[in-house]
Image 1: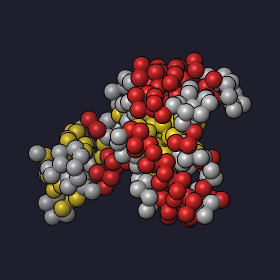
Image 2 (image 1 turned 180 degrees about the horizontal axis):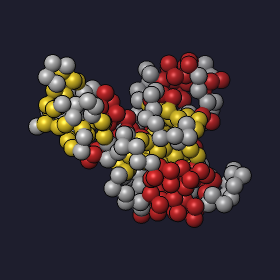
Image 3 (image 1 turned 135 degrees about the horizontal axis):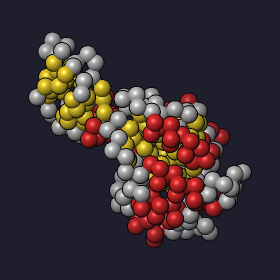
Length: 276
């Protein structure tokens, strides 16, 4: 199999798409039920960061409902009790993360590998600890205001808060640079109901309008955060032989590349000759 040209070739998202969209929501509010229903209707994927210590409390999703509610989406850590991790000793940080992860895995019957920092608060010490706690990515609340691929999975900023989603969404759709672009939106579903927000115009209708705007675009890969992480790690494993040139995929995922006007999929273990 050949693809031209080798100088350069572009990495692509699954099925040769140049763009990916991720929605990321915190706290496990009961309002997630309505948000998940909207996401499902418009075929948009979400990552939901839950505090296991608050499940079943007033205005929160119950333990009983969590598994079925988030089916088809990702559940990720948000610590047990939502503390500012930078204020805690190492041992307490480890308990907050590991206990949250274990409880969520018991509920879901599936691995939980990501985290959103409570209050977005993190520092070098916290980041270093997470590396040994089975956490593959950690999302902040720092807006990048762009669609760049993250360089550090444990300091993962977002494109914007959902209050700015429609404006950034239009830019995302209009941007035709050709290389990989990622839009990640974060928020709390209760904000859409008018709680703890300064702008009540960013309500359920606003979210519905945003999801309708982003629905069913051929150029967009709709994914959860952990799916993006796994895919980007697979791309990073690609090996280019300088003498051939031949590109080999040693990962366990199929990846896509584009050279010129040709897009090709490399299955696990496949090699591809790049023509110049």
